[in-house]
Image (cartoon, rainbow, N blue to C red; front, top):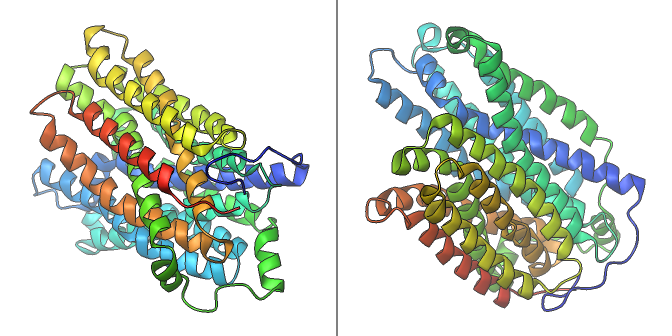
Length: 427
């Protein structure tokens, strides 16, 4: 692994087996994130099926989004448990199990009877399935970053994690495309009656297929070497982290805060904010969201590859500035030029390349013995806190100024850049 202050030159070509590893890891990650986000896209229809019809529509929708939020709350615990076994028993087993833990609940969501048949049991079962999904997603991103980075030659970890991150964000893009195709293929009343179940069933089936394919992956060379040398964690990895690696955990949590701000504010919250603040049509905001997500997916691959060649500190400064530019362009300049939102959204997606620096910095901050647990603890706890608080903060600040989203993203970019600068680095 290259040092923090300067990037090691890339060495060693990637084999066909390593590209296969990236493909299978990225495919599984994309399907997991697809399974996780389609719940949000279909929340209104889910609310109509799983909560009493006697309740007000706004209350049912609020309850459905509450179930969506429960998935975020389950991420830290699920991620820590899976990371513990990943550091002690092996990366491959946990990496394969996380897809299974996501695919089964997703498939069951598509088949689960509604409130009319199960009564109060319907939302309770849905809550349990959502918690299982949250636990799965808590292990997927950290596990994937560790898995692919330990499968590549020195100086290629940035490209590997960039490709995987592109797969994860591609899952959000896939979810958007499937929902658009669903509404284009079926009449609204059919979608409301049973069509909404199709994306869940598709995600569950393909997720099970991805789990089977992941069984063909090999354990990482780094873990095999640690196992031979008996260097795997002999006590709780979380205990080692909090005793010996507090600085790495803190810096990693701060960079993850920047990651959540970039994705939540510039991609996920952008459609409702633009509709509310500037009265942009829903169709235009949905197209803009697709453009932003596509450009984000491409950007993280490119920036991830650059971390193998350029100092991470330098990239932190440049990408932090770019993130601020993208945020102010999207929320400050796009309203001044009607019908250009798609282009500004695409630019903001490109400027979200900072997201690729987060796993690169975390992988360099933790030793192999507790690497999985270090990434999982930092990433999931930070995402649970700031992923949950960011929408509330933005909602509270936007009445004061329509530039609040851009100001918030810029502030987190500064925090993330400082955290990257002071994050420890290991060879």
